[in-house]
Each structure stands twice: as C-alpha cells, then as structure tokens.
Amino acid sequence: MILNFGEYYSSVNEKDEHKKSKEYKKLSPKMKKAVDEIFTLMDGTKGLNILNNFEKTLRDVSKKHRVTEKELTDYFEREVLSI
Image (cartoon, rainbow, N blue to C red; front, side, top):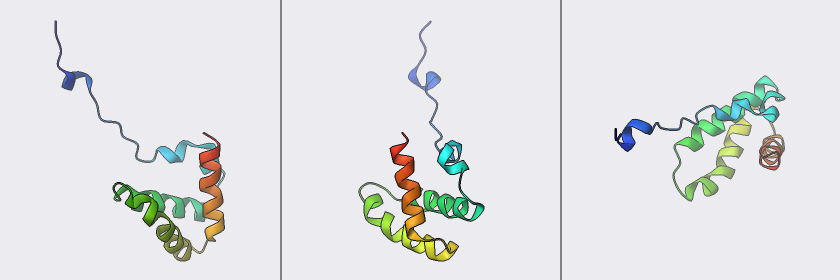
C-alpha cells in the first residue's frame, strides 16, 4: 500500500514552545508577559527583518511592560546558551 506524503505530513506547531523551557519557568509573571509579546510580534516578521526588528521590539516591549531591556536581553542570552 502506497501512501502520499500528505498523509504522513503534519505541520509543526511551534507556538508557545518557549513556555516549556526551564529559563522561561523561572521568570516573573511580568517578564513572562513581555517575553510572550516579543514572540507574538516576532512571529509575524519574515526573513532577515527578524534581526533588524528584534532590538526595536525588545525596546518597545520593555517600556510597555516596565521591565529593563537588560533583563529581556539576559533572558534571551540564557535561552540561546542553554540549548
């Protein structure tokens, strides 16, 4: 019996995948909201614009949620280094 690729293939759903990490679980509720918003905003960004928009998004979200840019940057550095 031959099956088509479509019958095997299922899309990968990475939404909220970041919430499973140890580093995310250590964050305060305020920081979790800020990180969630960054991921939501960055999901809509395509290609190389992600790197260009990341710093601006980080700055805007830190002001909105009243957390420091350094705290957010440190979180993302810890996430990258823990992989």
